[in-house]
Length: 401
Ligand SMILES: Cc1ncc(COP(=O)(O)O)c(C=O)c1O
Image (cartoon, rainbow, N blue to C red; front, side):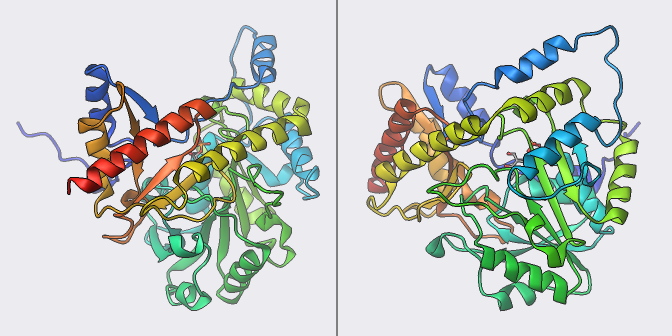
């Protein structure tokens, strides 16, 4: 008896390029090789004690469902967090989600019908591909370039991609995988395009706290002309080094859209209750010192990246402005091959470095094949050693091709 074939969606959904080298990493580990992971955005800093205290103090007999849009005290705490940046967000404009990932999926599903299009800037956070498959929407890429630090291309390049199926523009600001922070003028330009073409502006701002060199990140929520078009996707994964808590949130001032999000939320009942206790406590108790110490730690790591790689033979990138990523051009033709070679064939004193080939962050075939993404999530000594091994590997790889 034959079994039914699985869906086109299940066959077609992309495998994460961040994880696809994992089997080679596992083989290297089996051979006793240590691996510096610059390939994945898993912060190494401890989850604040406030999280664990809140979880412990809420132990009771039943771990119950909570409201579909999240615990009121957490929505209030998030409203207060935005208030500290002078951004007025009412708790009713916040919906708690199961990770920033669910926030992006809900944003896509709430603004698009199946087959509709969203314009986004490549390279982009690679899981947007998977989210788009789940939401049955098409991502239409506009290419940005390492040459200008991945800032916006000219407006005509964006507007030329708009069709009658376009429903939204999606940005990630500060950006994963590039570390770029859009200027106010750039956001205003996108707001104008969204208004002129009746589109939503979806902003993934999960790295909004991580802005370097005294920069201030601007949220799409600060542009009053698009208050009904703007949707923010946010998360505690990186803000509080709490990736496993699986908590994020949506923010919109568009009541109709929020009502739609709430119905999606009801279908999956509620976000994780226990994590919400912890998140509420972190939002309420962590002060400016916490945020500034984390930012300065990432900025220091960014500076190490600059010292070790910037201006080195054949390596090109501009100084990252925020988040904790850089997309870097290498003097090689195929970084998929280079990244695999590093794991298979290269080590220094029993260690190698794992990076993410950047092609998987582009939707246009053939783009980004000479670029890698680095996540600078290791402490100083490990960062220097990881980057030293990367440089030595690159020199050897280039010399033998
Ligand atoms: C840009 C961006 N958006 C969304 C997410 C997903 O976040 P979460 O862990 O909250 O689902 C990530 C995670 O790395 C990310 O980098």
